Image 1 (tube, one colour):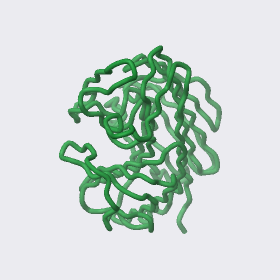
Image 2 (cartoon, rainbow, N blue to C red):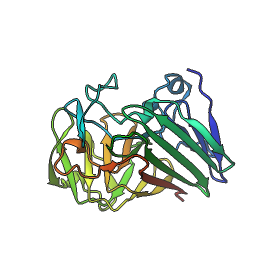
Image 3 (cartoon, helix red, strand yellow):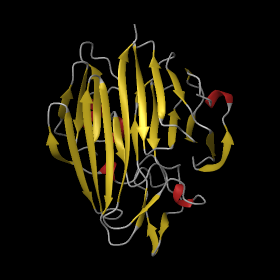
Length: 290
């Protein structure tokens, strides 16, 4: 698949974007070494045209999976179809599967926009800003349909993983899941999943949502020579995905837990009327480890 790529750089890092592939980040690297700061995407990954093979993609108007074939709005049921070859449930909304338009570009900033009509009308904007080794990303969504609907937002970055990769993220509880990877109940943090102090990632599969997050996380990569100091806004939850025996993991800042449309009180979701907006943000500050 041929895609137009955009590039930003500062004195420390280099960023490549693919607006037409779901408004995705392709790569973010250290300028003088080429070291990937997000999972490296090669030409083959880019040619797939799949955001899930790239560095990061936006989640709107919901994050992760939705059960029961849809969800209720104030004036009726909104039916959803599965939208991924690898998952039987609707997943990650619709913004990641549509081409975005370039609204503006300067040396240190790009703004992308999507006008979507599925599963309902909304306008999404992503603002990428790069300065002094800090990548900041804001995802802003405005509801445009006449009928109100629930919105949730997030970002889905893929990060390199080695045996020495370490994570610090302060959360209160975790959602335990069933075989379909839908949440069943909130639980205290198991020792292996308690990242209040920095520690290496578990060797077993993790694909769970954490709540009571303060929005900060630290990702240390001693084997790769750097760390990322991260800060979220509009995200009281994060999803941690650690597949077994694969060289990447995901820390996803999200505004709501998985399947929030069917949880009591719809935690983290926002009911937007026409013209109303919601936003999340996330930043990664690169620092070399000496």
